Image (cartoon, rainbow, N blue to C red):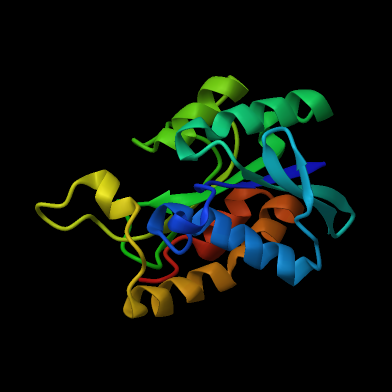
Length: 189
């Protein structure tokens, strides 16, 4: 079983903000797989389905970005899933809008949602799909930047990256993170 977790903030006021690209990606993945996100448990909205022969749980934590690890830790413990079978999708302000970077493991890179997941999962050995939302402009507060809405130009660029999410997740599950890195890293250059 795999857990695909999108990082974001719950609530209407956070829809279509840079910090919610993980939720947006998960909604697109669920729609492309015909999975309904309709269960509430483990402090998250969850959908269950399959990718190929693998059972998958799609997870949108409802704890806000900085506490995303609470859901991740509970789910991995409850289902006895190893961290390697957790795939996290989230925003990255260090990448240009629409750029994709997949990693098999690593540090939090300054992202508080990942920091929370590392703490609660007690491992850094999980693949991540980082979607670039652009660097914050000079003079912007980082929190204001990641909570800002997308411009029309950003939507155009980011929709192309989000369109790749089902293929990226499938590639990680079927052939591993390294294969996905070879295929998708650098997308959006």
